[in-house]
Image (cartoon, rainbow, N blue to C red; front, side):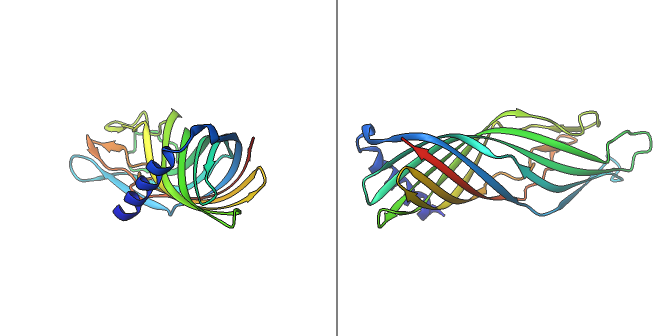
Length: 214
C-alpha cells in the first residue's frame, strides 16, 4: 500500500506542474452498489450482563451527482470530482432491558460531499486506468439509540478511502467504473460506557458514472 501511495503522490506532483489552463470541467452522475456484510455487536452493562444486540443489516447509496475536472497530456491524466451522495445504513436492535424502549430497527442517514481524486494512464487515447484517494466530508447525519443510556456517537466529519478505476473516453463523455475501499468502518464511532465499540468492518463500493466535460 505504501508503494501505491508513493507512486500516486509522484504522479500527482508531476501532473500538478502542468498548465491548469488545460483542465476541462463538467458535470457527472453515478450509481453505486455497496458491499458490506452483516455484523453483530453485543453490549454489556457494568455487571457484564448482556443489555443490547446491535446488528448492521444493509446499506443503500443514493445516486451521486456533482462536478468533474479532467486534465490529460495524452499519456497521463488527473481527474478530480466533487459529488453529493446519501448513505442509508439499517440496524436491527434487540434490547434485554425490560423497561427500555428501543425500536427493533433503526436507519442511520448520512449525507456526504465526496472528493475522489484519480490519476493514471490513458491507453490508445480511449481507456483510462487510475487510482487515488477519496475524501468524504459529512454534511448531515442522523444518530441512532439517542435515548439509550451510556450510548453515544462521536462521528468524525471526514472519512477516507482509496479507489481504483477503469474508464472509457468517447469525445466529451467519460464512462467510469470505480471500486472504492473505505478506511473507516461502517459505523466505528459508536461509544458505549465511554468505550469505543463500533462496527469497524470496512465497506466497499462499486460505482458506475457518466461525466460530460466541456
